[in-house]
Length: 548
Image 1: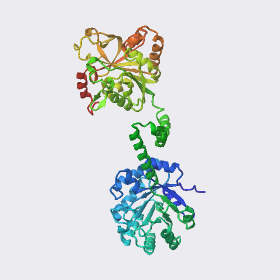
Image 2 (image 1 turned 30 degrees about the horizontal axis):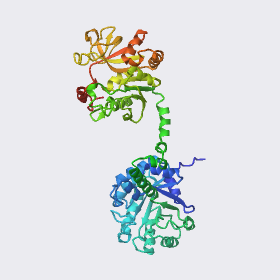
Image 3 (image 1 turned 45 degrees about the vertical axis):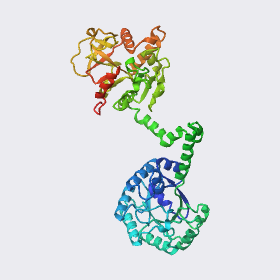
Image 4 (image 1 turned 60 degrees about the vertical axis):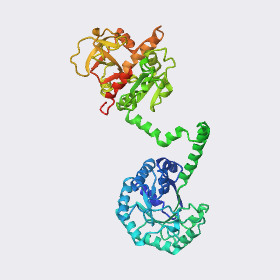
């Protein structure tokens, strides 16, 4: 026995044309409303031209191009599984335009299109309806035939809508046009009416006598019970603009309340929680996919130490924001560092904030607050984020701007503890009283190129540059074992009297004293630590599109 054919969207829509069962289509105008309509149980969606135009902020007069309408419809199809019938106005031009539209709709998963026998550009049927001219019957029939010939899927649905009743041309003309459209190949007919009673539509149905599927849009005669149409074997009713109209009232009411109250507190209980927004966006599916497809990749995390305001030289610039939010080339230091980390598959980023912590609000990071930021040092901040030191982990200073390849080199190294250090000792001789994080190597570097690999022998804050080989730039990578070693050291030394004053370079020196091996990648520039306005100006050289 042959398997039953797959129930494609086009086949689902064609099933809704069955006059033996009255079905309902609900208007939607974007991906979110389409998903809401589908979740409510509607077997099909009407992609309303009026509603799509309105949500784009333009009139329903073909002011939105057909490609713009198509783009919205594609988002709707992506957000749903069921069939979508697009309100295609007049077909967006002549027969040639329409057959291209049909091919493009099929490519985007739209199950069918409805076209109406008005002239391009159209005007909404409920605006000056009797003043609107209609297309010649022969021309419109040619458009239908061209569309049917252009479709590649035999189940794709083309619905022909006549405006003869709205235009005041009478019942006989409506029936004549509908029959011509049926013979031209239309899969179903819509007869439209602007009257508040269904009398002229019912008269059409009686005259039509079920010779071909009929869909109705009872926007004006909505009080008519659905059973009346079911008895006359109407295939489906289209509620054509109701989600849009409901959304308008809700948004107007909410906007006015927020403006009046100067607060959002009064509307919070009346609006959807953010969790519902994320659910409708499909966040659960993304989370499940990440668990499947990222599981093979090593877990990578990062802790960014960004609690300080910066040196007094920066205070005019950091009066309102922490140092990490100073902007270079339009982006903050924090955003640049996070963007580079995310590009290297570092997905779990914790930022230890202190001064002006409320300003640190980047989506996708975890903020850890150091309330004693003005009395504690780097190690105390790191200890607050100790639980984040899992898997392969990067520890970085929040005032660091560097090119992406420096991070890449550390992450690619399998050693347990790896640091990046600049052999030039940045701006040697300047600011002689400022402590520097300096390192001495166990052996001369094999060459002076980028990323020479040697072993760290000592670390100190000192201005005696001649005794040291390089300057640590504020980047440390830990393997899973290395991260565990750092966590263990933090746990064992929290009671040290000087714990709150320690810098990360002191932690590295202590690990060395305990026998740890720390590997060094020597670099030659491509980084800067922001300590002054001069540094900030020089940082622009690293913020160009080539700063990767």
